[in-house]
Image (cartoon, rainbow, N blue to C red):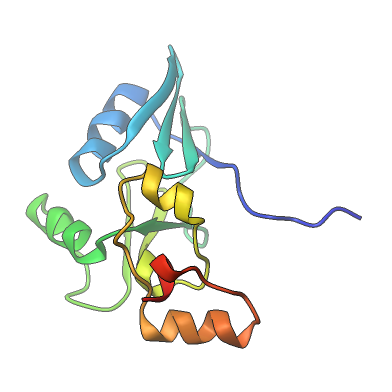
Length: 150
């Protein structure tokens, strides 16, 4: 049996790829991996999101994707500036214009850690884990490098 190691990408349906790229660029810094008339792929760190049109499903009431960022509060501020209603603190959940649920979490606070070369390649060599995240990693017997552990 194969062991699942992580996610390669998430696919999200939208009404318009052009509008979706514009919307995502208001809140997140990303690289456009590729583009076709009805699809686009945006790099988010070392994974990517595939955007495709048209939207064929109703808004997702129960499902969401968890997106890891280097500064959750900056995303919260940008969402507010754009007129979206989000919580003042704590959990950061919202829907894109097509009904896709998104939860934003800060890299510092999640248990997974990226390899030093990946962080360095992303320009995040100085990003450090919170004490709670480090404790969770240690509790699972997962080692951390000096960059994530200091």
